[in-house]
Length: 41
Image (spheres, rainbow, N blue to C red):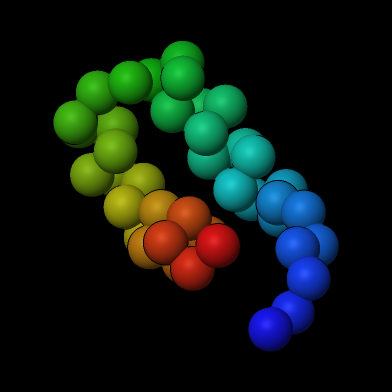
């Protein structure tokens, strides 16, 4: 088991943008970022 190294800049950016654009349309347009950086975190 590895130790927690913090959140990636991409993950933080994704959530900051999601806060400003909290809609299904925006999320679907950025789903690839979610899949790569959020689900893998």
